Length: 345
Image (cartoon, rainbow, N blue to C red; front, side, top):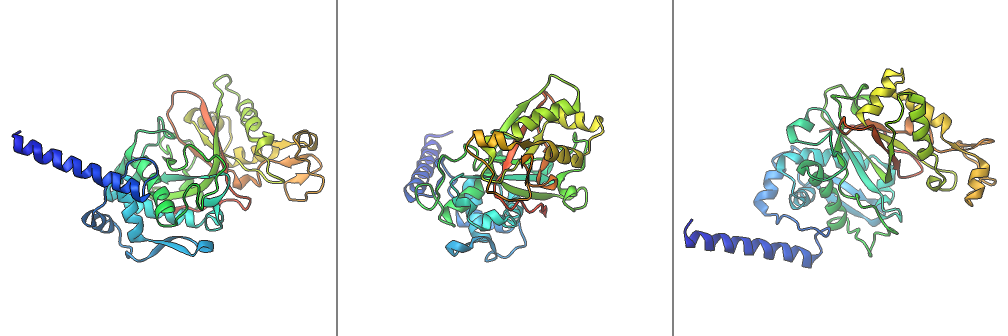
């Protein structure tokens, strides 16, 4: 390479650095560098979808703010997405807008909830969306940037930023990184999208807001009910009770899902078991200062508080690698439940 070519490369890199610094100065980033988005790049994203550039895909009605397809494309480009990811980004927004907590102010909650985006169908392999090892962690461009694009829209278009309109007390470390593919190939059950009514093999996205994730490590037994009791202990912790409400779902490892299935449990059986057994007594809650004497709700009875609102409101997906019997309890955000919808890509 000639000295002239090296000088041109150095100039380009310096220009890119200035563009990144400009984005920081303007407050467009989430703390990490963004990809400078040009008009030409945005047109590539818009060409990946038949949806009109001025169609509204996200909104916060109480703030009277909306995001169009074109604005979502700008932020997807800045997040590091490739244009072919953009239909998944739009399907994620469709899924999020179906959640009452999202349109009702969830982005501004003191919990600082994290959107969990779940992808089903062939699009996982087509885009390289991770469904197996390290599925909730870093290292995969599609997972990371699809999720990040959601956060940049919330910040840059809807105007909800920390120390301003956002009111998170502490927030979650994974708030804008939780996009996972379901491990359909090793799951013993139908994928989430099929459970929610779409034809098997449909590329689809579901989404809900989470308060947190909590691991359960049980490689000690092959008895399904013993493992369920271990999950139950985490699901039923008193810290998850907020008044007369609580919630839980599962991101199951392959080993745990297959153990349940081999023991004769369907996904619905696991949901029903947890609903029936994850109960904290009145005495337990009183010790924690959360007595239920004056609270009346479907989940409260003489035994105490059911820690999930209903069996069907316990989302269950299978994701991760087959290398250890470790799973996650997740905590869906909001008292009205999630929409239980899957949205085609």
